[in-house]
Image (cartoon, rainbow, N blue to C red; front, top):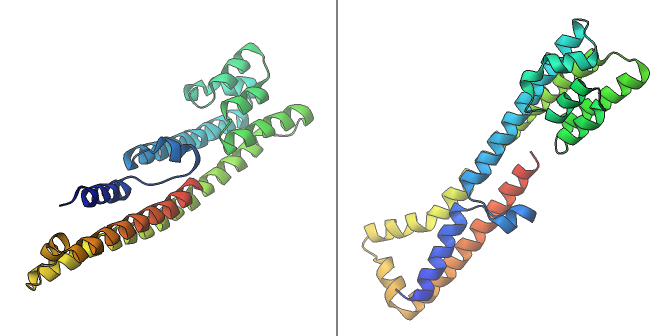
Length: 216
């Protein structure tokens, strides 16, 4: 087989196994296991935030002041280490929450609730309970969207495998398509064009599904 045909085939395999992203993801070109690992870590972080909100709201509902409540649920220090330190030392907890949750909408909303409660005396426990319920609803919607994204990804993989299935069927009927594709000049041209189109289709399908996942 010609080296250029091998190169195109190898590129197609890489595209099928490695999704194409945008921005920083495109520059680092993470493989599918890395992407899934990052998504799992983000999901675990969101679950920890909801559990932390529930615990904090419970402490506040029991009559503790906000700083003491935050210290009491310090077992979730991985969620807000800066805020926990600020509560213990009398620092600005709202600002620390913003720093801890720079990429977390839930933590930014918690910081806003904390700041409003500190400035107006509004009940923080009720606000955090509503925020926890909203975060749980967001997780439910996100899970439904993830299940929806899995279907087009599976469809793309099936379509990518169809040419190989067609060649196998042709070989089973005695047509010997592989011998023609590798032996005849026109066959090699058809093979190269097919591999290029297959690679382009795989890249486009992965780009669509990855862009949908980035919005989850």
